[in-house]
Image (cartoon, rainbow, N blue to C red):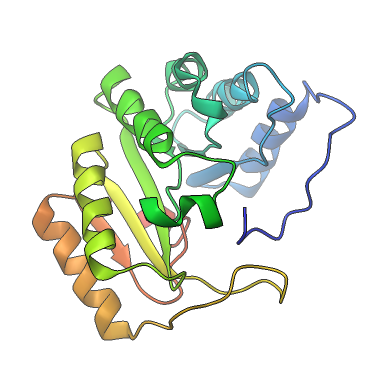
Length: 218
């Protein structure tokens, strides 16, 4: 993606012990809310869905009270992978839309806007008790009406939690910042999202997808 500073490459191994180590770390830290994410694993048939699911199960074995939020890649559109993840029973299933539909070819050129919203809608349909979450960045060249369209699509997909933050350029090689939004503009977007029916909207310049995550479903 044009905004991401993570170096791409092909991993050399598939670490099946990672879920138990992550669970042990969460238990040691006595976390109440854990956000679990990963790089894309497009080299794997399931996109890493099994590791996400096993991580949830291992966390639950050690502490059933921890709220588990999974921030997943798009699994290349695989609903079977989403089913694997949802079947483990996370409290929150999250996948970030990141930007408006028109900018996908420039900003998320290896992803698809419709596919990403399809994952969110499928997750909600598989378990209505799970909170579904997504996040977007502003400042990449989007128009206000495009942001509003995205919010309508979020409502249609059953999104419960939406985060809206300012895009910050990791390096001169990454996508250019087209606009810095004011705090009042972020507040207005947040109010619009809530009026449209999104249960929780967190909107501000420094908001990120895990911003105050433990408070988002309080």
